[in-house]
Amino acid sequence: MVIVVALVAFLLWTPDCDRASLEALYLQSPADMVDVAGTRLDVRDGGPKDAPAVLLLHGFGASLHTWEDWAGPLSVDHRVSRLDLPGCGLSPTRPATTPTRPASRC
Image (cartoon, rainbow, N blue to C red; front, side, top):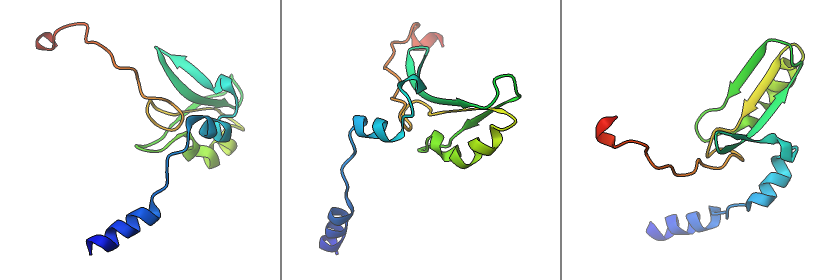
């Protein structure tokens, strides 16, 4: 049984794609990477800038592309913003930070 599981795992394993390949495939423009408080986020913003705003947030392990089918129709009458949360999609994880005060004082 262990040999069968190991064989199936070996046959189904695929290596991660390098970041440059993923950016070439999914990043529409380098301007889509926005610096927010020291963290780079992949952001898409569409629709009329003066229209009512809609912010679409994805769930755990997903990306802004979750909303592709919704963003187009919504952006006809709304300003539609989508972003990859840190560590998801093309947004890298947040840099490690040092606490500014001791944990005992939080």
